[in-house]
Amino acid sequence: MRQDFEKLFSHLKPAEPPAGLFDRIILAIKREQELQQTKRSLFGFLFLLVVSFIATPFSWTILINQIESSGIFYFISTALSDFGTFIALWQDFSLAIIESLPLTGMMIFVICLGMFIFTLRLFLYRKRLLLGYLIHSFA
Image 1 (cartoon, rainbow, N blue to C red):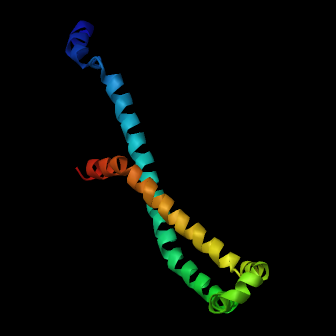
Image 2: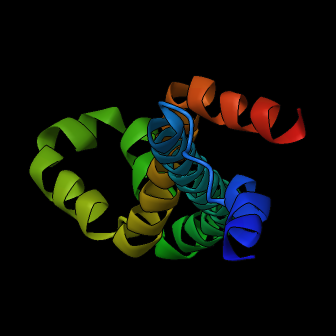
Image 3: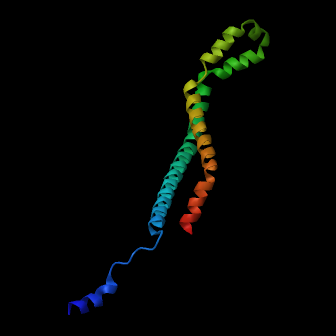
């Protein structure tokens, strides 16, 4: 009777995995990790791009307001209208213009614009990787 049971259940033994199955599983895991890393970088790029795209006009407005309130236009227009006096006192005019520059507004604008350009360049540089992810995720 025992032999009958062994004979009956002998075909239920665990099947040996086909050759290369482990390699395919490892490859699938690596592919999934690459897709997740690409997805994270895509969202990071898009977040930085949106933030810098929104912040750049605000920083431009701050820069224009600071330029208008600093009086730099007055110094430049005086230097251009009375060029002889500007030549005679060019050091004083130059220092006055430099002192009245809105450094805070310029720094904020340059940082926002630089972040926008850097993110856009990096996004276009990695475009193949990101497009590959989008094509693979929708396929």
